[in-house]
Image (cartoon, rainbow, N blue to C red; front, side, top):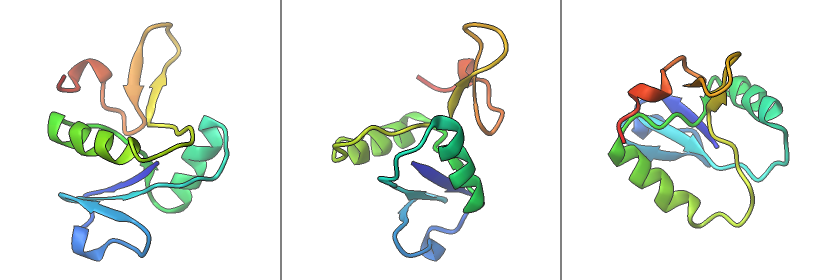
Length: 96
């Protein structure tokens, strides 16, 4: 699941889904987490980063339609239990 953030939703590429100022791509390609993030980077995007409750609700409504496994942009860093988003946002600062 790729996300282009800060992209005008009216300018989303074909096949991408617009929400607020982001565009999302639901991909059914099988890949490891690292390969999935590399694929996103090739589109100038990242695996999805959930920045707020409204975005989480929207994300959950989209993934409820998915029947295959998917990756998001949350990663455990060098220290066990220390999580952050691929864009560098600290997970502990994510609204819940």
